[in-house]
Amino acid sequence: MFLYHILSALILLYFVNGAEINVANTQLWGPGLRAEANVPVRYFYIQAYDKKNKIIKKDLGDDAFKLSLSSPSGQRVRAWAQVLNRLNGSYVARFRLYDFSGELTISLTHKGKHVANSPYHLKEVYGNDCFCPTNQKKWFKALECPKSFQQIEDDFQIHDKIEVSTLREKMLERFGKHHSFCNYVIKNNEVFRECHGSITDFKMFMDAPLLNLARKVKLPDISFFINLGDWPLEKNKANPLPIVSWCGSDDSYDIILPTYDITNSVLEMLGRVSLDVFSVQANSKPKWSEKEDKGFFRGRDSRQERLDLAAMSLKNPEILEAGITRYFFFKKDEVKYGKPVQHVSFYDFFKYKYQINVDGTVAAYRFPYLMLGNSAVFKQDSGYYEHFYKQLEPNKHYIPIKHDLTDVIEKLKWARANDDKVREIQEAGTKLAREILTPANILCYHVALFNAYAAKQNGTVEVLEGMEKLDQPEQKSCRCRRKNKNKAKDEL
Image 1 (cartoon, one colour):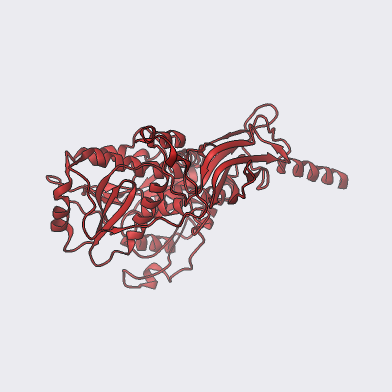
Image 2 (cartoon, one colour; image 1 turned 45 degrees about the horizontal axis):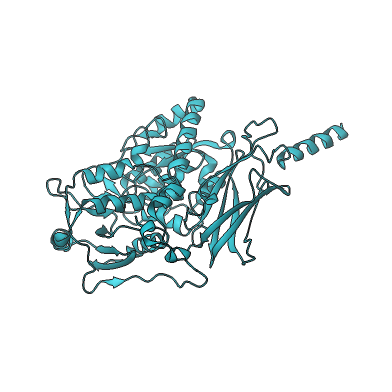
């Protein structure tokens, strides 16, 4: 019996360590394997296959694959490289380059053996801080950007022409007294801005993507205005002004960009942020069968429905774990809503099968991260939306709940009784989210929106007197070869 247990343990260790992986059959794909696919953190996907060329769907452990970078020229490659385990036989390999420009060799190995067509040799690779914008068509193709975005098409449908010469005056007249916003001008891939209003700190969330994109891809000349507040502003359907916002609503007509939260997570991935679209995928343990079959919520009291959810939790603790982390907007009532609870690491949310997504001041910006994990999302019916909501279907990608949350307990009981169906919804929602909320798609969306805006402009884009020019970071080791090429071939 003792020998039997030892043998069983050795067999288990053999498979957990990924010995069944066949390096020739395993597949690698994604923009990180193409030189022109320049994003802050380059990435590609790994799907393990066995010797029978069958897909492996189980967790193979964190150390199944090793990523390494080098340069055939002998140039030093400073990078943060990482392989993230998505817990189902698939992985995300990603790396951030520092002070680099030149040829790059990407090697992915399993137990010392190269995987698929590794090593991959890329020419003209540039680090994140390198100012070397490429042809837009090449960039879109390398990133495999979608041909269109439904939200962009809908947002611009109500705008005939955008008169550049009169837009500033109209914006100031309509929004200047009570709101904060900035006028950005992109001219010859340089970025300028002029801000209005008393609270303009959030301009940094527009500065960063504009400067980053200007280093990587040739942008159209445009002059646009972005709302720096949470709430969308434009209510005039008869004569709407094309103000850009990070959140939309059913009763407003703003042009919607991906939120500053998810965009910043793309720009600062493997840097200043720990929560991003890939880290969630690698930190959503445990597996479905081991999660607690309860609804879960943590958040501040930024909306009455959040308080109502906390009250429901006090009455139904066996099926709902919801609590308020901070009382600020409403009067504290610990008898009705409970005492403030401790913050919980976002990754620990996924210990629960059912994630309750409730609006904050506007749409809850945690929603995309919840969708990217491996729990089922119960989404409050809401008039607010982010740039990707139109690609989701209720009861297919998430479980809808009423705006007043009066059906939450009923829906949770239904979920417990219909585990297979809920699992199906969770898997479909997670799959779609991981396809549409990639770093590439977030940045593609920005450039596609700028192109749509430029197509509507009438007049010449000029840098206004008094506008501040935004400086690019210092280029330490960047040598952009594209500057010496025929400019006619490098137009948009």
